[in-house]
Image (cartoon, rainbow, N blue to C red; front, side, top):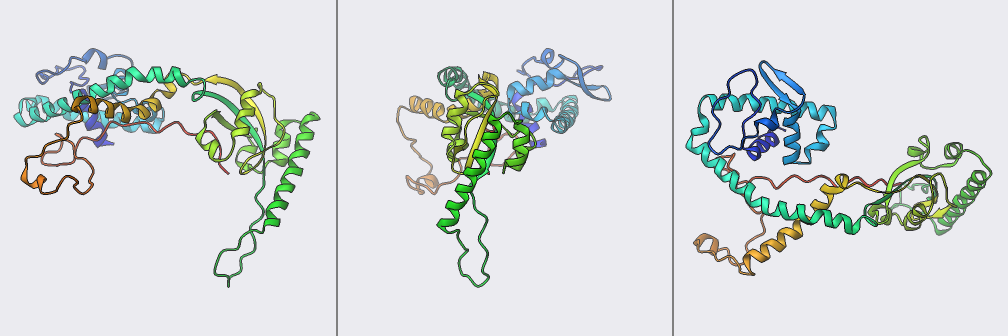
Length: 351
């Protein structure tokens, strides 16, 4: 966490919230963001120093992935603790005039170049992301919340022979028998639902998905191109869900893992842009970067004049590319790439 926070502060290149006391002189060229940092309620204080909501808002703006962290109280607490520590260190460094140290200024200048260089990609990603959302929102970002009652077609595992060299496999007859039994069970449950019995009662009694059966069988949101759903051969299930209205349920549908009776909990809706923005940008960034580099280089390769590099030949052994990290003097390892959010969790439950 501490390492992450130090990176955030290099990105900000700014002063921190110094309250009830005189602020030491900021480094030359530092953006004036004191007004932003001072907005909102006080989140935490230590002595005369305060962290306000504006501080967290600005960090989220610099790195949107922090937003997920601060929705968790424990994660937010740890973040604020590190912010407070960093601020106190920053304040003392300013008091001692370390902002005027030539090495410190060199590191700041190098980090500034990295941030500005990445800004070209960031701006293009920002420009294209909304268009990508509008283009795909009816397929990729349409969602429907569903529940299911599940009937597994998996037969009981065969008995293990300790003398056997290979694990035992279910016979074809066992597989077919389990499939038929699941169909009978599913048809019986479906008939009772049609007869007016409560969904929760049938889920408790019949569903083989014990993780969801106690909660109305809810498995969350699915999209038309849900990747996990496709792996489970849920194409017919998802298609049916998108065609139904709230509280309607389907006949038993066979998928890779068994039969499912599906119910719509919430009708079709489009995910808001702010919920999928980071995922879209994550997907767009590599291509946009490649396109920009193709344009900037004009297809020209790098000419190496360093003799040690030339000895490696045109195809050196593959190694992770190094980048500049002015925060670690003498260390070749560079500033990490921008943090990206994990893609939204698939709602489909795997069995």
